[in-house]
Length: 403
Image 1: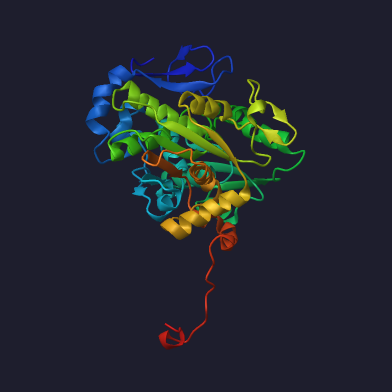
Image 2: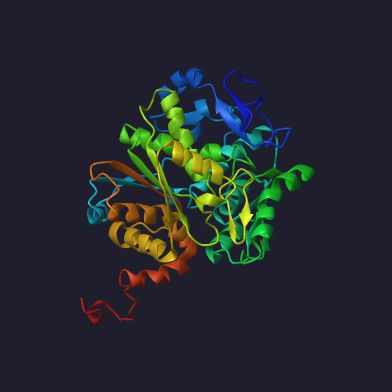
C-alpha cells in the first residue's frame, strides 16, 4: 500500500492496498484513509486556491495520475449569506451552501468526480447504480462525457425531471416498482445487491454509500473543505439532510481531516434531519445488523451518519412533509433559492431548531442545499400554503398588464 493512503476495514481496522476493492475479503465495510501528517503540507499549500477538486484537495483524495482526473466543473459552489431567512429566525450569521449549482444540479457530482476518476485509473468503462435520482443523473452525465456505459435503476415514481435527465444523457434506464408497505425489504435488497451483481459482470457499483463504494463518499468531504476555506474557519453548526447517510458522514470526515491536518481548530456540530415516513429509521431501530422493521429501514450509511452526529455533539430531527414544503417555500420566497424536497430536509431541521431557540443567534451556521428544485417541479405547487403563488395572466402588451 502507499504510504499516503490505503483502505481500512471499519470494524477491525485492518489495512488494505488501494485498488478496485469495494468490500474487504471478509465482506467488511471499507473506508479510504490517509496519513494526514504526511498530507498536511501539500494540502495547506493548495486548498484555499482556485482550482478543481483534485487540484485543491488532491492530497487527501485517492491517488491517481493527473490524466485520469475527471471534472465537469463540480464543486466550488457558492456559500451565500442569508438575509431575510436569517432575520425570521433571529440569526446573525447563517449561510447556505448551494450544491444545486453543480453541473447536474446536486452534490452527487462531487461523489461522481471522485469515484469515476478512480475507476478510470483502473481502466474501468462500465458503471451502474440503483438511485433515487440524483446519483443516476450524475453517473449518466459523467459517463456521457467519457463515452462510458451507464446503467441506472430508479423507482418508477421517481420525479419525471430526474428520469428524463438520465435518459437525455444516453444512459440505460431501468424502472422498478416504488417502495410501499411490504416492499421495503425488496427495495433494500436492490441497493445492497448491486455490489455482488456488478462484481460478477466487471461493472463498477456507483451507489453513493460507503458499504457499496467507499470512493463515492470521498467526494462529499470536499464540501467541508470549501466551507472552511470560504469562512476562514469551520462553522459552529452545520445543518444537512440525512437521506442515505453519506452526506452527514462525508461532512464529518472532511472536518475531521481538516482538524487532523491542523487546518481547522474544531469540529462543528453536525445536525441532521430526516423525513419521518417509512424511510426514516427511529433511533431505537438503529442496530448493528441494519434491521428492517415493518416499513422502516436504516439507510445504508445510517450508522455512519448517526455516529458522526454523536461525535460532533449534533442533533437529529424528524420532519414531516408540511415542514419540508415550508422549508422549500422559505428558501424560494425569502432567499431566491429553489431546492428540491429532499434538499430541504436539513433546512426544515434548521427552522425547527431556530423556532425552538436551540441555536445561538451569534453562531456561524451553514445549511447545505443539496439539489435543484427544477428536478421536481410538481413539488412547487404546494408552496401556496405558505406564500401565494402568482398565476400567469395572458396580456396583449404592457398597457394591459395593469402596471
